[in-house]
Length: 490
Image 1 (tube, rainbow, N blue to C red):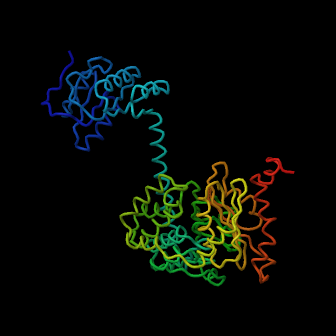
Image 2: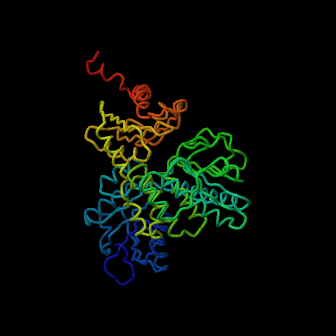
Image 3: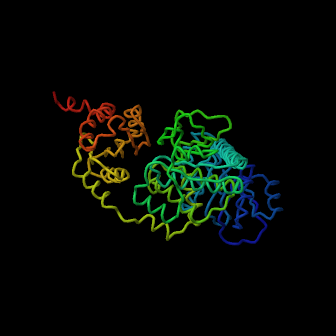
């Protein structure tokens, strides 16, 4: 007869552990911290007695036996953790037969055993070797990120003079908020001998971006050659090197580069700090991790900016988002100013933006799921991505390219929902030799300098004249040049 635990019955328990070897015992210790009632079942008499001595509610049973559950209080969650695959399978079948609603976490010996356990009704199947591997990788990543953060802090702490933080051209909330966070780190690391300035090129044109800068009272300066020369130290945020979405001379020494886009051709100088993580959804996520690791106080302005930066670059957590982005957003959320965030996200739309969107709709041309829209001359280039965001939602459209011309460049904004196409890579391959081009699988952009045509007065006519051979490179790359032949054309 199985031995009963010499304790007073207390009604149902939340957890029951079947098998109290090394894995099972460590689970018991973790669950005990929750102050929930934990039952323990094991066939080893000495082990059961030892657990009772530690005041655990332990029962001596053979979990492969058909009457293994007789006399046990009811429980909600079961951990079946012995090293015997057949015994574990028998336990899962017995538990599910008697308590269909109980959730079961079970240890598998191998993939075949794991399939049987899943078929028997186990909700979670664990392979201890994989758990150990994941834990090891997680721990080393935590340690590595801590060391990276500390290295950044120590580097800045040793500087004296002026520290210039430069965003990419026509900065978005991700770039701006990242610059703010780096400025906060610099203030904590060296607020006495280091003056920090934030620079940008181009324009802050998108109405949400302007509202963002104005409401958060962000101090940013236009980058000039004189300003660049006045800085003793330089950082680039949300761009991967000189000339990558900026007009900084390639030979310029950059001390810090932090980005979530693919690294450019910039070669690191000795002692420089480079942290580029293409797998992360936003540079603001990287900056949030630094603030966490360094225990830098995060005020409402910075927290609100960083959360907005993550949200916009991941399109409200629907594009290129990772679990890390969600974790950092969760950290920032209680620190933000909710009213301020709401005002930033609900700005008025400018007349020009409305006109550009209207022209993009009117001028659209669709070919085999690819939409092309010429919006002509624009002063506010940020209206193009807004038009592309709208046009990609049209039925039958998988990829949308909206293009226009400014005083000094042809601008292309692209959105994509065709999983077979990485639109950022396609833009880079088609236009990379002509200017700045690239992006993500489902969004990208290109800026092609006018060079010899910059003095032409009628920019709209110039765009009409030069755009077709330029776009033909993209069409050839994605295979549109053969569509007519495929469909029976000449």
